[in-house]
Image 1 (tube, rainbow, N blue to C red):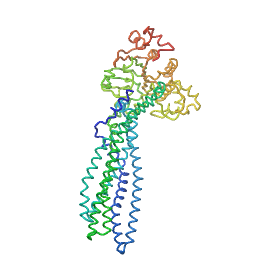
Image 2: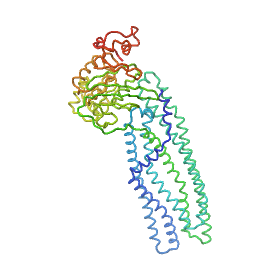
Image 3: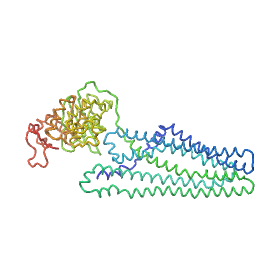
Amino acid sequence: MAATRRTAERAEPAPTDGTGRLLAGALRHSAGRTAAVFGCSLGAAAVAIALPAVLGHALDLLLDDAVGARRAVALCAVLILAEVVFDAAEALLGGITTARTAAWLRRLGVDHVLSLAPHRAAERSTPGDLVTRLTGNVAEASTAPTTAANGVATLFVPLGGLIALAVIDIRLFAVFLAGVPLLAWLLRAFVRDSSDSVARYQRVQADIAGRLVEALGGARTIAAAGSSARELDRILAPLPELGNQGRRMWHVYGRAVAGAGILVPLLTTAVLAVGGVRLTHGDLTVGELLAASRYAVLAAGLGAAVGQLNGLVRSRAAARRTAELLAVPPMRSGGDPLPANGPGRLELRGVTVVRDGTPVLRDVHLIVPGGTTAAVVGHSGAGKSTLAAVAGRLTDVDAGAVLLDGVPLAGIDPAQLRREVGYAFERPALFGDTIAEAIAFGPYTCSPGRIEVAAEAAGADSFIRLLPKGYAAPLATAPLSGGELQRLGLARAFAHAGRLLVLDDATSSLDSVTELRVGRALVRDVRAGTRLLIAHRASSAARADLVVWLEGGRVRALGPHETLWEDPDYRAVFADPGDPSGPGGSAAGAASDPVGEDR
């Protein structure tokens, strides 16, 4: 599929400075919980630093059979218990912090996606890639505050170990310090190599997700074509690359862990060897040697920071993908009110809309008087659906302005705009648990009576009542045809009809008789206002007060259907390409024909 071929290109990360801001925002959102995690980690670090000294002191007291040995042993037990408590609290608070941060990031991402013009999100990501960014990537990015808090507190352990080594014996400190540059080099190499491999791994994951979503959306077509095996191969084609990047990622991590696993024992052995010599010369006690050996292990905990760094690298890579999504500019709105009881006068002033560098609408000037039913007609690609989208600001214009009752759409309060402009689509997406909830879905709650009136106007009441539970029938399991789905979409739009109602090819799956009944009910039973219809049938255009004829993104003509019908080019808009006789007939015939022309 063509969309799949573009997935990898869309998934490439663009340079952005939003990653740091996003992570900083996540940290601010969970500042209190992150501080608590840091406090627990710091407490555990303090106990870990104090414990070797106390153990060494207790051992010296026990060997000398000195007074206070029991108190020293008891203090060791208290410190061990405290470390367990701090670790448990850190794990609990860390889990809560990560979950709350993930919810905040996911809500932020979803709100931003829904604030975009629909084509903006589609230009940047495929549906599968969007799902990956808002689920898996957000989950990894949400671990950043906890990982950072733990990582900073973890640094106190090796630093404390180094200082304690210097306090016990400066020679032991010098021996260990000689190996620190190797540890630093190891960590630097890990961060460099791991960042690239993680980013590539996440991009391939998104590619596979995009292919899978496409296949699920076209499952019936795939089954009918008998191409399941080919589709499976297509979906899993990036799997070898995913495996390569996964192995590379674990190779980098394993190499760092192995390097630390070799270097840390060597440093510890060197410290013990020098400490043993110092012990034989009487410069160290047995307890101090024990403490020094423990502090050498703690100081080598810089190697243990590999795990924390790995988490931070993955979090940052995931946050970068989320930040790329948030970097897409949202639609900006004002707070201007619409005039009360306005008739719904729609005006387009020099409107131009560009998609992929090509103008879809070109300098369109149009006035639809309030209360008028206007049909928009034209060949495929003329810009009809784009005109419908800009009429209710589902997308912004690149030049010009769109006004409703004299107020620019960009300046209208979004909540009022959505209450006053309704839409019905060719393939409606229905939301809710029941049929009634699907119709009631909108900017405000509808009463049961209003739902039923809207369903009747849309020609849906009759088949809804045949369902086992009627309006309470579960939406997910209701056996609905394409035409019935369209009628439910129309019912939803009718139930929330405002001063402007846009029907974007919303009756294409209805037979002409049903469409005629719906058109009559729209005038009789739905709130009066302006209607903008995307029409593919001559009969639909004939019933409109005004016809807007688009050609090449421009308004070629504007007028009543009967007048335009005299133009053979206009009649050709509704002609069946497979009919050798070409367009013909009369405007009256087109309006009264009970069959009409299918799309």
